Length: 183
Image 1 (tube, rainbow, N blue to C red):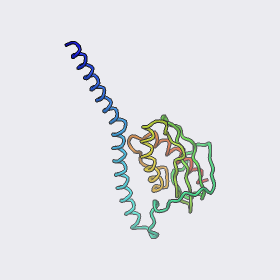
Image 2: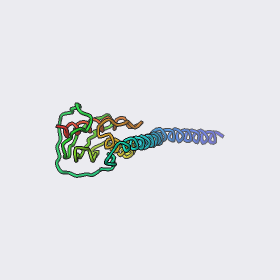
Image 3: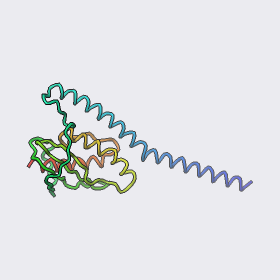
Image 4: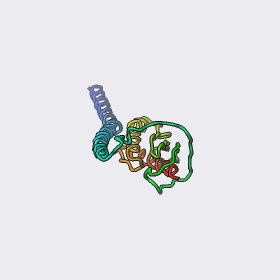
C-alpha cells in the first residue's frame, strides 16, 4: 500500500513538473512568437496604408521598399554614438557601419548602404544569438526592423513587443550609421 502511495506521489510530482515546464515553454517561445506575428500584421497594414497614401502623390511610382541592394563600396565605422540626426535626408552614398550598441541581452551592430541619397540596404551585422530564445526572437524581428528602417528612411521605427532589447540596440546602431552618412 505504501509503495502505491509513493508511486502515485511521484507520478503527481512528475505531472506537475511537466505542466510547469509547458507553461514556461509557452511564456518563453509561444507568446513572443504570437506578439511578433501580431506586429508583422500591424506592420503590413501600416505599410499598405502608407504605400497607398504615398502612391497617390508620387510621380515615380517607386516605394522605399522597392529599392533594395547590398553593395559594399566603402565601409566606415565610428566610435561616437551621435544621435543628432534620425532621418535619412541628404545622405552621402556609401556603406556605413554603426557603432556597437550594448544591450542587456548582447551587442547589436547595424550596417547601412546608401545609394542616390537614400538608405537602400540595412544589415544587422551583430546581434544576440547566444541562447535559443534570443536566436528565435532575433531571427523573426530583425527582418521586421530592417523593413521598417528602409520604409522610414530613419531610425524612427516601431518596437516589436517582446524584442525591446534588440530594438534598442538596432535603433542605436542604425542612428549612428545614418549620422555617419549625413556627414
